[in-house]
Image: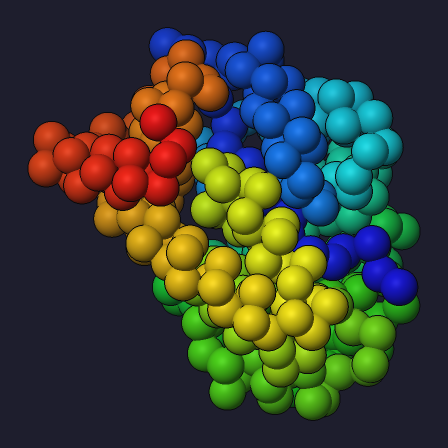
Length: 293
C-alpha cells in the first residue's frame, strides 16, 4: 500500500519580519503530528514556495525532514516553471531525505501537453525519488489532461497526482486511465471525501493546517468505507474549508493559525498581503464557531 494516503497537510511557512521562523515551523509540525496528520508537504503553494529563495527552500525541507524524524512521510514541493530548476530542487529534496517530491505543472509559460510530459520525464529520469504530479489550472493556467497523466504514470518513479481541478469528471478519468496503484489525491479540501469515494487515496489539504484531527479522521473514515462518518465530518468541516479561501491561499490559513496562537505572525510575504477587516471578522466567526479559538 502506498505511503501517500490519507490527509497530508500543505503546511504554511511561518515568517517573522519576512524571515523564516524555524521554531514556529517545528511547532506547527508537532501540532500536525499530534493531530494525526498522515503526511507533511513543505514548500507547496500553501508554503509560499514562489517567494522563497533556493537556500530557504532547501532549509525548510531539511528542517521538516529532521523534525518529522520518520514519523510520517514528507512530500516536498519541488516544482518550478523551469525544468532545470525543478531538477535542482528535486535533487535537494532527495538529499534532505524527503520521501517524495510534489511537482506542480510549470506555471506562466503554458507548455503544451507534450511539453508537460517531457518536463516531468526529464525530472523523473534525473532524480530517483517518488514523484507526485500536481495539477492546479486555477494557479498555473495550464490543465494537464488525463491522457497526459496516464502517459506520465508509465514512468517508474512517477507514482501519483494531486488533482486540484475540483472536477470529479476529470479525476474519474485520471483514475480510469492510470494503473491501479497510481496515487490520486485531491488538491481541494471540499472534493477530498468525494475523491476517495470514486477511488482516490486522500488529500493534500489547506484546512489540515488548522483542523488536522478532523481532516485525518474524515480521510480515515472515507478510506475505510465508513460513508456516514465521512459525510458527517465533511459537512462539519465545510464552513472551515470555505473560510480557508475567503482570500488568496495561504493568507486565511496563516491568519487563523495566528488567531489560534499556533504561530507568532500570520503575515504572508509580499505580493500577498494581510486580509482586510471584514474578512478577518468572517474568518474569526468561523473558527470560533468551530471551537478552534
